[in-house]
Image (cartoon, rainbow, N blue to C red; front, side):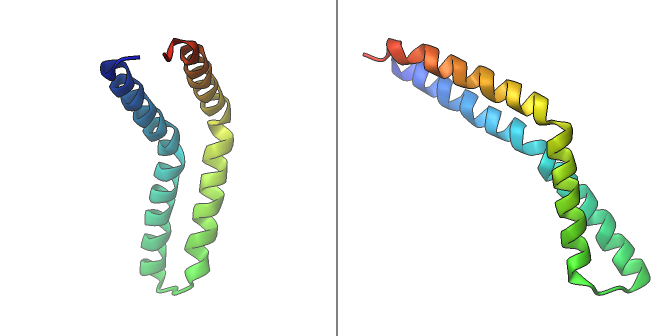
Length: 88
């Protein structure tokens, strides 16, 4: 493996990390914004309400995208293991 291949592999890894982490992060951000808006409108100052709602949203996002996450991670791991014999 030369330097260009290592840089390409590293960039693929970072892109995969960003893609796999995006669904739960987006779900938490959207639900957190909505809960904060509702709390501001109703003047409820309960801190655990936002945490529980975001936790449920993240769990639902992970369940909804679990097959896609698993297949992407599996194909990346398979590609990584296929390249191990090419290392001098």
